[in-house]
Image 1: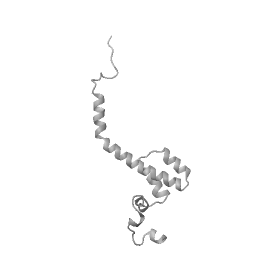
Image 2: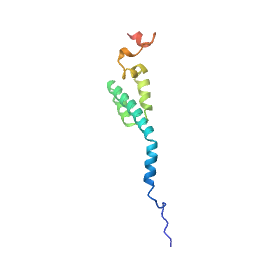
Image 3: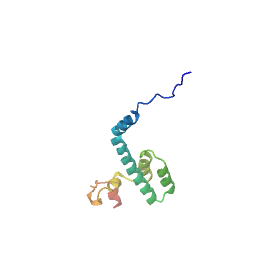
Image 4: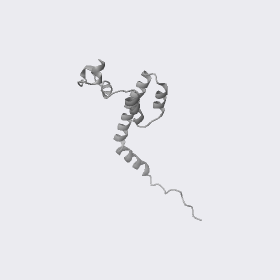
Length: 106
């Protein structure tokens, strides 16, 4: 009677192959993490500022690589790209567009 192994016998190179593949995708992995952390952080901060517990819990638990976070920021919280840019610049450095909604409010 012959014994058949459910998987082939390893030559010890499996771990090295994994490291090589992981190294190739490390930059992409790092960029995805940065993308997700930015949108997740901003959406959680915005929902906390707006005192929306339901959205805060949903955004905290559900991970959609930033898609749900972007939907919340732009469609529920009604933020604009100008609000996003204000995170990185002082307000006086962001150029104002003539006839924009921001000028009407000021």
